Length: 352
Image (cartoon, rainbow, N blue to C red):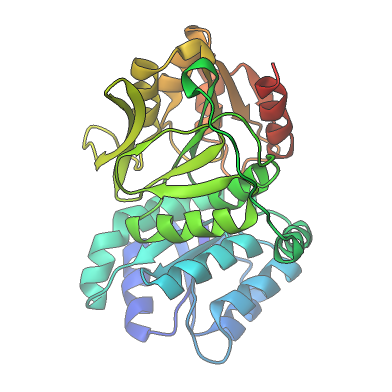
């Protein structure tokens, strides 16, 4: 049995969530009404996984999360609103050690549960196997971010066709891992970096803005057709997919509606396949980071078989060793590295 602690200040939400997981048949469930009770139950009940609301009386979710991670670290899935405030709070929760999140849609509680139930069950089950990052390390990283002044110098334009292209695929546990890697890259990193992070539409703009504030390279969400330029980081907009295409012979990025043939979005597989069609595969570097499932494993394996180079995040650092494990299993990984060594490898390959 999986021991699940549900934390929400709404009695109706707690009841609906309890019914949802009880119907699964393999969950032992307890509930808490606020962050204070969550901290206490984390010690008394010893849950395997927690779903945690953010806005609660007595003690809010972020405060509770920081105490949970300090006292008894456990995988936590945040359940937060789709508002700007909710998105920013969710990123803060990921910084504090939460494994994943589910965006709580607007509307009545019963309808909201119907919209997110499949995603919630999937992410809670995946979180059980996840490895929360240690809070001490996260706090040190966050302190560096707060005190580091980012200066973005002007980078002369280069011919992207003659150089390289970096693709990054990432899902569960990804935002924190992406921050750690991308902020270590220099402002003059010569290749464009295209990122497909599984994330809802309302979150990717705030995520890209946060990354732009902490990275030496410029970061932007791709919400309209845009030329690919060296030395920039492009984040696929949530709620759809991103593809590499051409206009008048020029390499472009294009947002497009979700392709129903693929399970996860923004799709790593769709991005990878489009890059192979439009760019010399031998000049592509593809990086597979933490996440559940197998999104992008086929495309990244093909990139390697066509002469490109690939990195799979190692099990020792991956929050969820699903997507990188699939790439390794298919023989598609040139290198297997922990997250903290990936940025240095990207720099090394860019230098030739």
